Length: 220
Length: 220
Image (cartoon, rainbow over all chains, first blue to last red; front, side, top):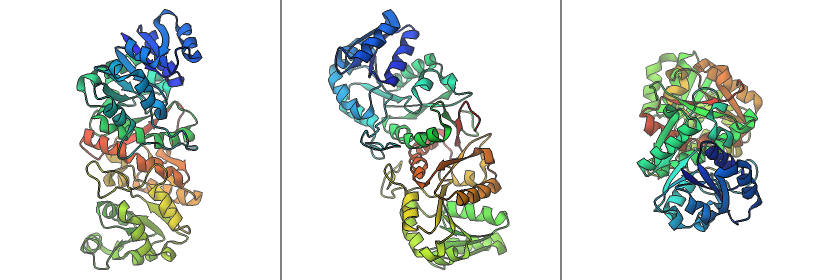
């Protein structure tokens, strides 16, 4: 399958590399066509990778991944262009971290709205699925880094889009039983606001290689 | 030991009953001295329970528990009176749910502040420890309702106060290894904002009898 991965940071590179490893063709998109990080990434993965503008990467992908910094996501997606996102699954792995905040950072949107919802409202013809934003990039594509059963969450309005994303997560190594569909895109508030707890757990654990498991008396 | 439990709702009653069951003397406090729910509770638990105003309950307790609704907590604690809280461990189990919001509710404070911090700032002579606000009342006092290992979190500025609260949690049935000290009271933002995810998980699970376990490669 063809993927457009928007964002050349660590999350984008890790996701894009894993998708190439799984046999997909991946275009990494950035603000400019000659972004050094994107070109270096494309060269490093061989034939399965290419680089270009946000618009070129989004046009290339049958599925588009938003791996840009949350504060830049809406602008990056505007540059990608609504027609290049229309009718496509748009996997949003970003968190709306306020770049002007200190450490630990705060969110630029939360509580009564979320970045996932903002993206879906701005691009109504895309099928936005919030996913993977509750774990570190390494864990996103290699859940086995964290032992045993632990969960990943999906938020989105389109059932088929969520099913498609679940298949991709399974290819990454996630156990289907560990994928929790939280409901429509408004549930992205839950996973985005969890960042506040994740950041404190990260400080306590001293590593980003952790995750949470939801434990309940009933299986599932 | 003597406890003052502020709040006559389900959380307050469940906590107060468990404390009596463990052999403590408990005064349940409310807005008025003749609150029917508080009087009924006191009568139901026999000699270990009594009821009174917020101020009477706080004065009675060597340890005070804030189990009032988050939106009413600061006012309830003002009625309890700063002198009755000074030098005492104040366990804050509340969440700042906005009563004017719909379902699922939103928070009245989050992201750049928390109710736990507001309480600590308002009552600087109390030793505020945020705890138990990430689980349902039944699970608070009976963690065995959820199978296996799962976590409870502490936030507070005073190490001895947190150690004292950890002992109480162990009496409730929590495994010491499952008690995670997140750091100072600002980390209450993490556990209070987790409510947004908790509410969505509650909807998915169909029960409040669940919790999260933090899983990482390193033990602990």
